[in-house]
Length: 124
Image (tube, rainbow, N blue to C red; front, side, top):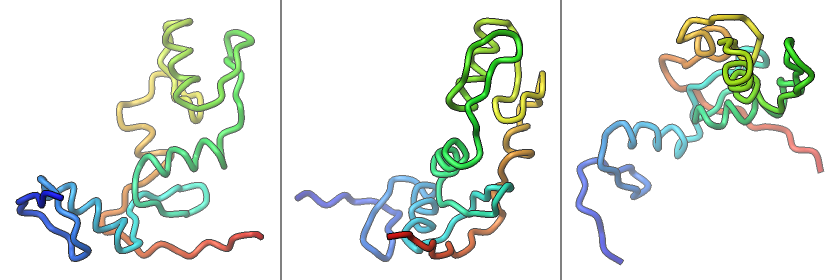
């Protein structure tokens, strides 16, 4: 195995080309997160994990207000409205012509400093 010569190395041994990649890895490696779901206060290490959580726990299949089409995810609803009805909407709440940062300011929050993740109770 060839060892990469890189400037950004985690204490676990993982190495990265960019400092930003190392910072993101450290949160995950240390069980810390900075993406907060404002609905249930659950914290995630990556934005994609928060998006997956939102789709599974908080998004109910939503019907387009202009036709009978049903969306299975917020992004699909927003894409449908734009492609089929030439309308910009927020797929999460349906607001028309949202600001560019609407989802980031209204539906989730990136914490300034990462926090320890809570251990989740698992049903057996």
